[in-house]
Length: 109
Picture (tube, rainbow, N blue to C red):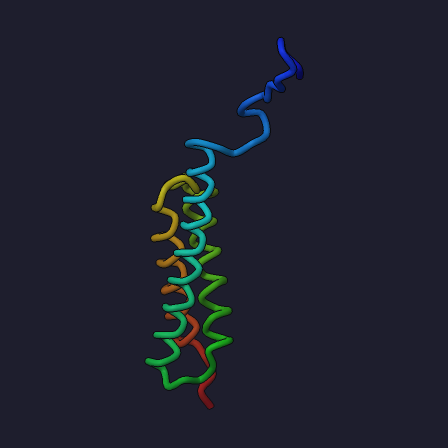
């Protein structure tokens, strides 16, 4: 849009992500990165404690449990939202629970 003496006006806030909204989105992605790193570290620790049987399997179980924990926290119980850090604790708890049950019921031959 042109105004007065040839300067161009820009509509602010309709499509760009600036200010508090942009910071919130960056923090949300940081939460996801923190949760993903924590889930991998939990899988790595569980793999070390159980005699290094396979990091890929432990990571897969841990990630599945983390997604289940997130789903319970955000979608089922409504205990946390994606704007808070509470869902990362739920995903960590889901990861720990799934790793525990995986190693408890695993076939050891």
